[in-house]
Amino acid sequence: MKVLALVVVIMAISGMEAGLVKREAPAIPNLDEIAEQLKTFAETFKDKVQEFVSKIHSPEVQSQYQQYLEQSRAHVEPVKAQVENWFTELLAKIKNSA
Image (spheres, one colour):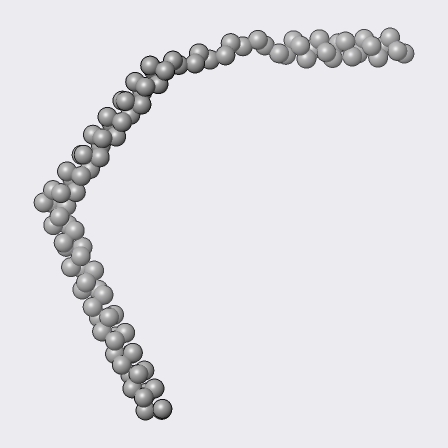
């Protein structure tokens, strides 16, 4: 019985070892490669930011912004007037009740 158990254990261990594969660790990039990648990233980021800023300052975007601002004001002004009237009425009622 002990021999059978020992054989089962040995077979299980050998099966587990067969499942393990020796793998090479991926190559670690050296410091120069990392620095070059960071430099490339920084240059790309700088270019994209400059491109974005130039788009924002374009006359087309500025006119779109002005149109949006005017439309927003047109929608907000009636609401503002209603709120002011409501507060005026509320203050008048408070003064009359006091």
